Image (cartoon, rainbow, N blue to C red; front, side, top):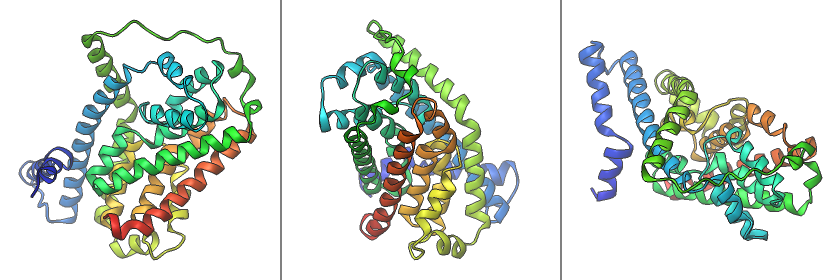
Length: 334
């Protein structure tokens, strides 16, 4: 076993935590872990603990990185780039923001009101919920490094292309008037000290954990039910690669759900174990994190219906295409 496999097992997959959860079920709850109930409880305890550990560590690290990129500094960086380079930078910086579209909208308003090209702001808005360090590391724990890297690359490409198309269509008039008229506020703060960055990161951990804990419990509960009570044949028959409509079905199921990457991971893990295809699972995750109805309602407050429709269409087509592409590549990357 190479160093990466050992590191992955202990620090990402946390095999030691799985052993500990089994001991809790058997020694404390006094339920045999080999039974359906015991296995379901072990799955629930292990996944909840693992995700919360990863959540604390990842949000702290990401928030520490974010402390170097306040909105005003990000805007200044993006102002230096035009055309496709601007879209690429918008997608890259969007990947450093929090975990859902809603949290990116205030920054989007600031970018738009300051005169940044609309295509760059939409590359930012598209990449923000789809591609971030948390998504990469969590996908790494389930599907391996090949899928995690390919997911990030293709997600970035989708964000860049969506922004470029919106820019080419010249949809500046489709942004709400009040957004354009918001007076720019200089959000550049003095340089943080290391202690201030740590305090900021700890505060972000607390704030985000308070927002997502319920989604994690719900996601793990659904994952545990799928993992232990739904036969593999049913899952693989509906969401497996042999069903040509599986990706479309996953997107339709995912859109009404409002969660973030932490809430979708346990469901994705359970579906994968039960035989769902990788592209179908990723399409479901992307639909939940990027295209949920609550997120679209939030975006509708800052753009008009034409731009919203084009944005939804572009991202939905992209997600579906990514799903089918991953299904085709599955034999080579898993």
